[in-house]
Length: 397
Image (tube, rainbow, N blue to C red; front, side):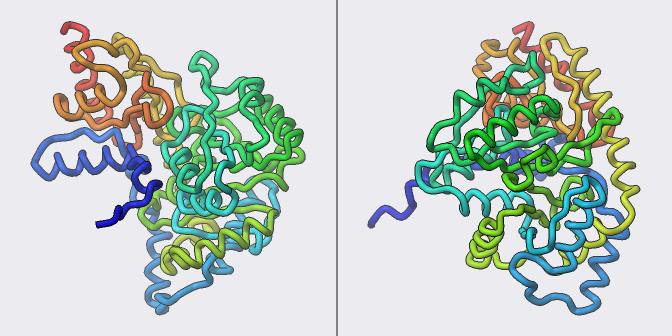
């Protein structure tokens, strides 16, 4: 029989975060008491007003196809949110709605990358960026960062990785997995570099509403001269606890990208779920009080997680500026009891102490693991108790 799978399918790695979630579910189905720090989603129920909007949509019989790139009502709601929150003006025709922010990113890479094109990713990066770039035939180019400098790249390091093949730079802040923000100075320096080299920026701003300590968000498109060069990606999953409803979107002044991503979507998934779009209209257009409440809860959990991690001998972490992840430095334990990297430690925690976390290697740093604090305080306390015990075992081994 001829070879069935394509070369790109054979090279594609599974999502590390989804793999951990699957293993966690498997153990729980066997009756194992697993503490889950792997999930990248809020543990809150979707707000009632949003659920009711979905029900009303169903009652109206809205179960048919919509326009490929989303309903006009939802595009207007997205535009309203951009304008009200950040003063960014987009028309409905500048917006494409997809089946989640991940889908929007996939469409963008498929639309802009030719074989050999390079896309710069700043480490630590979300696990799917390099894989999506490679799947589109491009080359992910990684810029390393230092934890001592809060994982903010040196602009000189970014400039060194720019080549004649560079097409775009991917941004994500606050970051998954580190939770850190980039400084205004860095964003402005990056804007000058982008302009000087005629590049695009794909700005993944899915955590823009989950900022702590009173911080204010600066979308990259608001940096002077960058709106025409930026494709902003966002969605309702994290902000409104709507992960399973799968609604994301992109916004850009570049009409070619709008047309191309819409065409790609028309030949792959077609339109996003009709009912979920109605729910997203309510999420974006209605009162935003639930967002403030959830952010406050996440901030208190962040404080607790940071304190507990830094109390464990051998572990350390930077206090996240936003999102709901702790990127924990585990380098002290590498080399102990056969632990050669983050995957070994994550496996040890799950199998021996029944704590699920995500290894840092797929994010670009094998010296770290990612813990999600999108879970209740008593679970955080119990999980960290188990991690402390595991670390003591490794230290005494």
